[in-house]
Image (tube, rainbow, N blue to C red):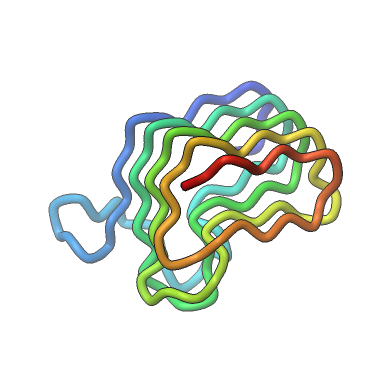
Amino acid sequence: MDWNSNTFSNNTIDATNNVLDTGIAHDAAYDYVRLDSQYNSVTNNTIINTTEYKRCVGIYGSHNTVSGNTLTNNPAGYSTVGLESGAHHNVVTGNTLKGGDINNLGSNNSVTPNP
């Protein structure tokens, strides 16, 4: 998302299911959803990451909200959500995280609770 105030909600991204596969190039991108700007909302999505060393959501901007999502890393072991060093005043809450955690390198971000 390159513009301010975008909403990305109620989507399913799953490369393991030929009906639900969105065609995202899972080898090329570092993040399935990338927030570079501000005041974006990512809510109520199901994202299943199937490529090692990729993240479901990457946050590089400020004042974004990521909530109510089910974010899965398969294979497990890498962060499902990453907030980069320039990311600030973002809210990541109420998400179900499977197979990975939140990597918060930014400042003044709220990243709890996420069961």
